[in-house]
Amino acid sequence: MTTAGTTTAGTTTAGTATAGTTTADAAGAAAPGERTVFLLAHTGRKAAVRSAELVVQGLLRSGLRVRVLEAEAADLPLPAAVETVPEATPCALDGCELIVVLGGDGTLLRGAEFARASGVPMLGVNLGRVGFLAEAERDDLDRVVNRVVDRAYEVEERMTIDVVVHRNGDVVHRDWALNEAAVQKVSPDRMLEVVLEIDGRPVTAFGCDGIVCATPTGSTAYAFSAGGPVVWPEVEALLMVPISAHALFAKPLVTSPTSVLAVEVQEHTPHGVLWCDGRRTVELPPGARVEVRRGAVPVRLARLHHASFTDRLVAKFALPVAGWRGAPPAQ
Image 1 (cartoon, rainbow, N blue to C red):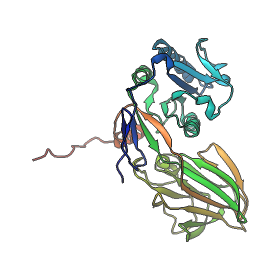
Image 2 (cartoon, rainbow, N blue to C red; image 1 turned 90 degrees about the vertical axis):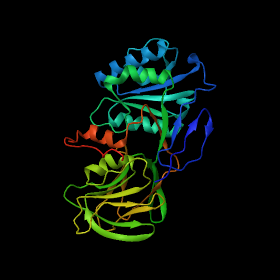
Image 3 (cartoon, rainbow, N blue to C red; image 1 turned 135 degrees about the vertical axis):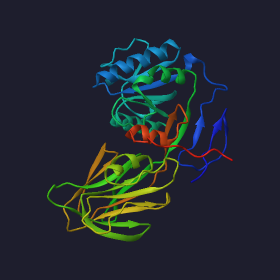
Image 4 (cartoon, one colour; image 1 turned 90 degrees about the horizontal axis):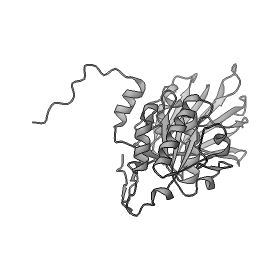
């Protein structure tokens, strides 16, 4: 584990942590009317529409500008002062200091795509179920607006993974993920036969429903459902978690962040499919090789408080902690 790098009032201290933090810089900051927040919402949900309306009203009252996608603006009751952009490109976030995302896990992962492509930090408000990527809940909207207006947030960098698919020695697909890259079977009645490799050396081969290659951030997502370990976000590591493997040795593996993980689909097996963050997919023919390594570009998340990941874990999963007495007082 390494120490997080921090930035305060424009002075940077070098650090190599997975979750380095940056304090929002108030020194020399733009005037309120020159600050722009990009809003992304799941407009198919009434709760998100109402929440978006409240956030927009609060930001505009405080003199901040708000920008949204044209497709979403049509479904939101927004005043004329709100800026709109036609397409979800990195240029759409030019001049924005923050992306505020309102929705469940799928919407938050869509916001992560924006954040990675643009370098703009994302602040998630959970309107779904678990929402580990979110920093606030629906009841916190007033506090979210106030903290954004006051720049009272820190920015944390989360590790991503880069994914490359090879076929007969040629690169046929490139992708990335914040949570995980999952190689899965397509046919419900046939297992996917794979060989696992780490750092250029074979580990094992078996039939399975799939393999999840995840980041620490993704350890509480699909990898968790497949039986993988929960990894604290500041730990630098890569995870490889089998899904319903037909083998005696099919344990989750945790490797160095510099490792290269590979999943080879056997030539004699039915084709599989690659899913990245459950959002982007590509078919994998027999003989395909999927390589996963630490991503070159992190996703930046805005944080409102310093609550420990342990407390977040307990709250999100409603874990029983009755009977805990805590550490004895220092002598």
